[in-house]
Amino acid sequence: MSALVEWGGPILLWFAVAAGGRGFAARLCGGAGRGWGLGFLTGFSLFLTLVYVSALVGVPIGLLLFLAVAVVTAASGILVGRSVPSPPVVRETWTPAEWVLSIALGAAAILAIVKALFFPVVAMDAHSYVGRALAMLHDQRLDIQLYHWPQPPSSESNMSYPPLMSLAFAVTPAFGGWQPKIVNVFLALAWPLAVYETLRPCIPRYAALVWTLILGLTPEVFAHISFDLINLPAMALAMGEAIALAGYLESGDRGRLVLAGIFAAGMCGIRSDGAVIHGALWIAVAMVAAGAFRGRRLPRAHVLPLVAAVLAPAITLGSWILYCRTALGLAPPGLLNSGTTFGIGPVLRAFAYIPFRLDAFGITFYLFALAVPWFGVQRRRGIAARFYLVSTVFTAAAIVLLFSRIDRAFGGGPGEILPTSFKRSLFYLVPLSGLATALSPWGSALVHRGYGWVHRRQRLRPAQTTDG
Amino acid sequence: MLTAAAIASFTLIPGYHARLGTAWNQTRVAPARLGIPLDAVRMSQFGQKYWLMKQVKAKTFEDAIIVVTDDPADPPELRSILWCAYYLYPRVLVQESALRADPELEADFVITTPHFVMGLPDSVAKPKLGLVPLSDRAREYATRWTQ
Image 1 (cartoon, rainbow over the protein chains, first blue to last red):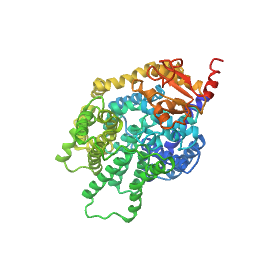
Image 2 (tube, helix red, strand yellow):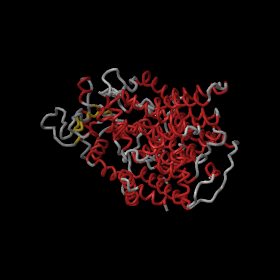
Image 3 (tube, helix red, strand yellow):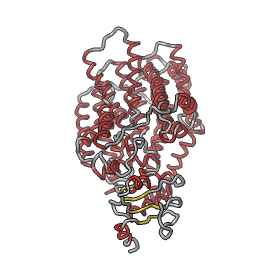
Image 4 (spheres, rainbow over the protein chains, first blue to last red):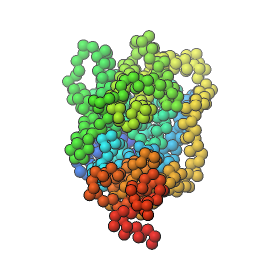
């Protein structure tokens, strides 16, 4: 019975959160966001933000809080999503190639599940994230005793990171279980699923499956399913924000701005560097919108959601920094300094070297590098494709600039930081570059050619490009 | 056929092969893994370091102040207050520098390592992994260890 609660409890909770998130995403996207991938990411971000805000105002952290917030998220999400009409679904028979790809994706999903659940916490940094989760459950508050020990954690420590992911890890021990990585299973399955849901309306099914497989199995990212670190969830939520913003640029639906805000709040509440990614994505939005909607004014009704989406990280990251300074007496993360910094040279060299290592990011960035020149050759591409391209470039630039400003004395210096933290920061680029490539002229040409190769037909018929 | 060939060749790329191989090995030994107690899995991962944390947790009281090593020659896990806190919280962990900074702070226990005995007298210091009571209440508590 206890094993049933230890494992079933968290699994049911995350399913409930996903169901709620699915309803919210459907409402905010006008019925288009009814997929389980984007739904889980929406619910995950909303659930953690609500738990964090509740804990911040003094509600004791524990099973009761998790259950209450999960029920509220699920019930309200299902309620608001119920009345949203779903877009009509065209049922088409699956080709053998699509069956093979689906089976491969199923096998990848099983491997991901085993990878997440096989080991207890073993990664060095994961001990601090999950340890903080255990401490928060023990003390029932964010202000754990560890912050007030005779030797409090330094501002360089993981303990001064925003606590949302630790709250997610605390769900399993709150049910009495030992495996906090149950949430990694959901994250590992949700982000490729969200990629598929995003690509499916734009490219044929077999091509959407291929891209999902390529991105889902990106080696370094795939490996992190078993590590219990915070790069994977931050990346998934950054991708969610990018998808919501691309949807806004395409449809002009202001609900998607709110969705982007939900993802931004979650991402910045998991990793502080999410704020830099958030900024880069919004610069990309401004650039693409300025090019596409030249001379058109922003509707007045869009101003408030837009401001809310830009300022959403203040709910989590902003409040956490204030809380660190005031209640905890901890200096906020102090990695940037006016002293000697890494400088741009070593970071650029690391950037040039790391993304093209097969054991790090595989073919993801090769394909992106192939896709980029095609954007120049064929300018007439969809606004979403252009946004993913521009946001990849700006996000890469933001990451490089951020790391070039890090103090040389921080965390072992460039020799330690660049092969580890910097490499993991490039996770943010994986889905962005993948989506840009899949929707690029090069990707489109490959899809048309590939359809013939895979299905033994000469060429893809025009109608099948959009709904095949 | 082409798709199947692409998937098969995908796993032959060295980087992908290694990562997938790890997961594949895990899948193959999963049934055995499910039969292994959690303690044994952690022992297989961390060996003596996990054994030490288990011993320290069992042999100390919850509000104990415990000194951990800061010697660079020791494993990074044992030097990390946060790593040790994962297993020992809510016991308070400090390093020697904190004791120097606050002379009134009275440590209850010290975790000794081959490189760290924290100025203990020769009669007490043992250059190996272990736990030594320092304060009166810790010594009194330690009398129960053998009971």
